[in-house]
Length: 115
Image (tube, rainbow, N blue to C red):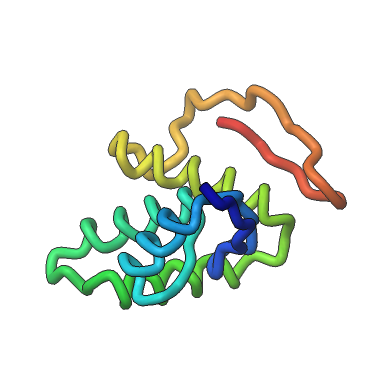
């Protein structure tokens, strides 16, 4: 079983995957490779729209979202996961009782704040 490193076309993170898995992801996203987190974000985006925009439009929307941030890719992924979990839990706004648990340094002057 051959393993290959492949770079996400949305966030720029690298993953080591089998060639079969890479081919199946590319087939699902119109020839573009997306990491596991971006795949979930695109599927979530496609499902949230009432008029089902289609996967291709959801990929474009997610790529635009990723390009808005100039920080370390790990920070973007962590922030995206936080937003996705809030959406799924139904809590899009910060609650007044939210507490800041920690701030971690990631890469060059980037930080992650967990709520």
